[in-house]
Length: 217
Ligand code: GRF
Image (cartoon, rainbow, N blue to C red; front, side, top):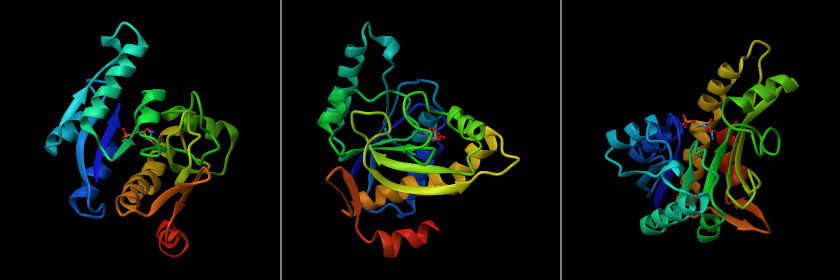
């Protein structure tokens, strides 16, 4: 399976994917492109260090959003990946990209969807809102991308307990370590090995109860 990973920032989730491909916990998979909207993203350095082709297209280079959307679509069509992985990508994925890659785009979100998600819920702000609300549990979700914001079929989720002394930063870090860096490689491997399909708007993972769930506990 050929994957394109779309990033905007530090790229710790990208690193988890690079490591998973290398140590074969992600089977049968090659990262064919890392795209960033942000030329300064450290994720690009991680990709270059791993010998992965990179591309940067910033919306700032274009007069209209539609021109940018078209350029992004063309890049992805030329790359022709089997799967697009949003790993901390802050660009809103254009509708025409969603249509061209229906059920072939996944995203990692740092909360238990449908809580603390949707427009405006990104980065540290997600964790700040969890703490403001006094939620006792948060976590991470990997889902397919559809036309909405964080509304597509859920593939995998993992809870992480909130602690009394958490700050947004400590909660973000623990959710990454305990959930995100495991969940995203696991979801990619499940797709690479043909174990995920979408039926009636829901993701069905074969062997979920017997094999996946024990590994997530
Ligand atoms: C992660 O928290 C991810 O869930 C969210 O953006 C962050 C990206 O972090 N979508 P990194 O760039 O992978 O370190």
